[in-house]
Image 1 (cartoon, helix red, strand yellow):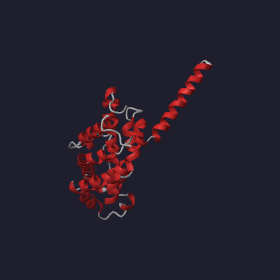
Image 2: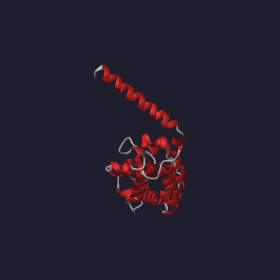
Image 3: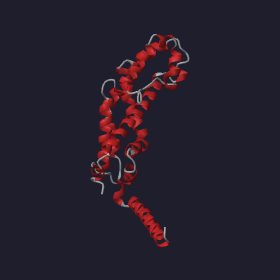
Image 4: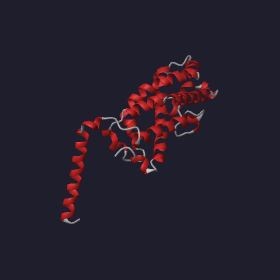
Length: 222
């Protein structure tokens, strides 16, 4: 690169950095993003992912997002259950966990929409960088909030599908269960974490598909 070209490149880089600082400090920068553009993109990805995972059996059918019992992908739980596992009872419980994840996904749209609605103009650069940038940004910035909001949905679903009852039956007389996290609270926490991971996995795919139309991505941002 020639000296003049190098100087011009440095000036462009500095100007861009200054512009980003000014953007972050502008009074309107803290305003929420419009519902079109990137926010509309991630909302569409969220709705698409939740719709698919809310279908009966969706979590269990897809091994990439299948929800397992706590502990080394369910292996520790199976060993602790012993005879119960041989009778196929842990398989039934695992299916119940996935049913609960699906039920919660079907009720989680307002929770995800609320988190997406809080995205602001200062978040825009991080949202527009990669095919799954918006999904990953939401996972990082609002993951703990989503966990708190989704966890009660999971708990209610686990109760409704009989997972808690099955866990209680399998745990009778097994003193090691609690230490392995196989309690009602531990199960709820594990299923919530796995369900959210699965939802974000599907959201990333939905987002990538929606981004194939660049005009739709940029619409409403600039």
